[in-house]
Image (cartoon, rainbow, N blue to C red):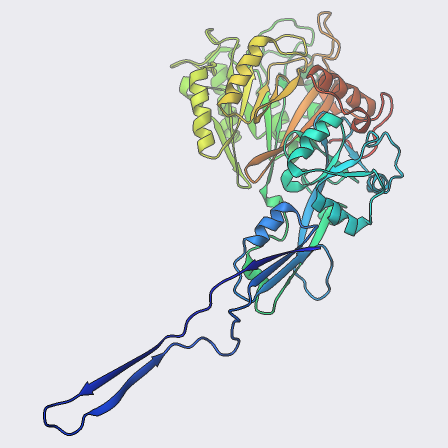
Amino acid sequence: MRRRLHLHKAGKPLFLLIFIYVFSSCGAPAPVIRPSPVFVVFTPTASPVPTDVPAEIQLGDSVPHLLQEQVSSVNLLPGEKITLDGSKSESTPNEIQWVYVLAAPFPTVRDGVTSAELRAAWSGVTSPELFNGRPILMEDSALAAFTALWGAPASGSVRTVQADQILDLAWSESTWAIIPFESLSPQWKVLAIDGQSPIRKGFDSTNYPLVIPFTLQTSGTVDPASLGLPTSNYDSSKLTTVILTGVTALVRATAFKMEQKGVTYPGEEIRDVLREADITHISNEIPFFSSCPDPNPNSQRLIFCSAPKYMDLLTDVGMDVVELTGNHFADYGRDAMEETLSIYKSNHIPYFGGGIDLQDSFQPALFDINGNKIAFMGCNRPDIDGPKVAAEGHSGAAPCDFDYFTAKILELKEQGYLVFFTFQWYEDYGAPPNPDQVRGFKRVADAGATIVSGSQAHLAKTMEFHRDSFIHYGLGNLFFDQMGNFDWMPEGIRREFLDRYVIYDGRLISVELITAMLEDFSRPRLMIGSERAEFLHEYFDASGWPTVDAPGGAPAGTPASGTSVP
């Protein structure tokens, strides 16, 4: 069935102006009447436009809501006609490709499926645990589109829902959905299909099964190029990815391993993941200092510094911005801090959350990549009144001046920036945040920060969605030697989060939790299979979310099918 929209426009009147001048005089011969010139405005005669036939737009039932709006807003003349539906036509090359995604509630462990598994679910022959024994949710238009592509779904395998209800229903029923790409939000987890995902760099739509072609047909007088319609709802040039990481401290056993096995050794297993991001964030808690002593893997002294050559590790993993909120930035005094800042500047690495003085420490690091404006700010809470924070004429980490930062966040938002705000908070070794931390993080979220992240946590902490913000209270370590090598270290301290944020056309659309395990006192590697599933299950549960268990991931001890988050 097609929807018809008739657009009426009045025709143009034809004006005929005739002026007659009459001259006469008394006693003169009969007056002479001379016709005046006649001026006529003609419309073109080659292709007269019928004024009594309205413009017409026909839309197939499979056309998604956004595309319906875009087509319905085009400017047509009387008698002109366009048709858009999901059927292929060999007579016109005018095709619009619409990308859909397979999405699940955010607290889902499973990372992907194969196209064969998805088609089996559509046909009703899949194993019940894959989709939790529940139908796939989608809008009416999506059902029409994929029915045309795949044939009718099996009874009970699909459920149609209004677009504004799909997300809530998916969360409440722990099930999955097929939605248009433009409907993505961070509360969804995008599941890869055969390793392909539209939120990843290098996405190849030609090898992705959730692309629907719509054919545009027009009357002979309509130039399709003049309509201003998109060729797709997906444009890779509008995509920007950001990775935030936890604690980095190139000291003690980590530094000792670097001396033994090479400066870049700690990053070898995760280098490609970090390099792929448009912006890779590192929170380097300690200064570089030329007079730094040789590393001692058994030292329990909490005064830290790194040899300047260790900067090569951070450039090797693709660091694009560095955070200076750490408790140890000032451990070796002003000279070390100035040397550190000089090293960052010589490598063209922006910094935030610390600086040469108070004003410098408050400055945001600003980026504009693929049309997406991103700002980084951060502060140190534990030392707010201590000697380690920046002050007038004094280097250090930025103190947490909430009044300043909340006003600055609002200012940056008004300029079109998405604000990433990071904290060095009080350290503890439990997964849940303490009440004071929750209040502090939510304060900057309420001010308008899109992301609020804790850079202080050596043990990973929980996360939550708060209004329009995503809050992760602590990511764990990145490059630091804590492997349970001291009696007081809790179990699980080797586990790490690397959070990847996906921004599209000025909007945060997805959060991906990359998980890693620290090895050899220095070297994170990506988690796979059951260890990733167990880590995510634990933290989703601790965050107060019902884990989407069956569709979310394989049982403990079983590797997940599909593709793991890299």
